[in-house]
Length: 398
Image (cartoon, rainbow, N blue to C red; front, side):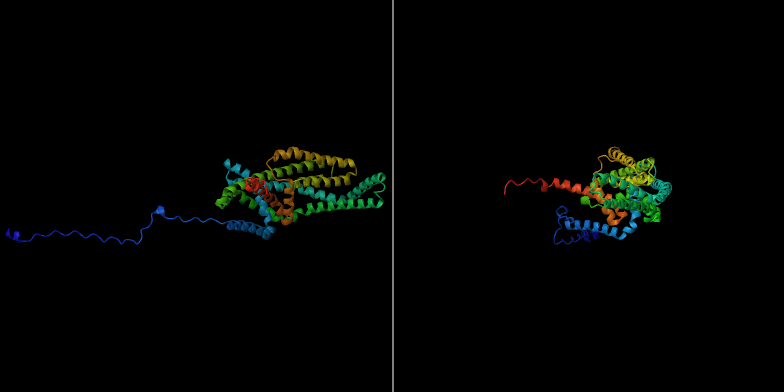
């Protein structure tokens, strides 16, 4: 007990020293709300102009470089665009898109081959008849022209002398000879003009793939649109599609109906080359007014050469006048109506300009380019009419 009293009491253990505080930074970071946000990058006007100019230049350069091989691809694109609504309907009722595209392309190829097998021998036979009858046609037209000039010279003797009569008869014969030879070359060598093997093999394959992937391609192109102008570009694309689809599908159906009518009517009145002239008139009706005028002039010349009477000319003229009335007041309003805003003069200019620039490829591209140009022109016209450039009041004084 004493030992315990003499022992010093144990001192309690000292608490551990607190850790050293972390060194204070020289400057406190600003709160997140107070930090300045990085300014978003905005494309300049020069960059936008450079983008669109570069795209336009790339397209024109591609057309210039690859125009000799682009015809089957553009034709396949036209076929895919034409058949896309039908493929969409088949897909909505449960048919897979690939199967629908395959069936539609095979059906179009079968129809084209059937038409070729049925019509081409008839056209070749008519070319043979034309080449055999061409001298007699020239003589028949010359005799009809001579009789008409003699009748006119009796009424106006001071104007139509003998030399003028001989010149007119010779020129009429030369024109008939040129028309017959050109028609024979067109039918006999027209298929060889376009690379048949390429068109027959490449076009259906490319059309199938384009038709199968059409919705996905549209979605991909929509994703590539610049976000600033995406809404405007979508609206322009919808307007172009509405305009182009109405004109293209309606015009093709109109041409098919006119070709059947002219071929049947001219063959029914006994014109030896009525089938050829009728089909040519219907196909060329794709160019407004040109097909009917060309077919009528050709049919009148052939009727004058074959029949040698003015009654035959009146019957042929009645056929074409009836066709124009039916086209203008029945076929065209029902198939196209007021949906088409492409003026006939603008279409004619576009087709001829495209043909001169790129040949048959330019003809295929002419109407789509004309439709796009028309939609863009109307868009800028609307913006102009809503802008101060148009709405500013006139000056009231100097």
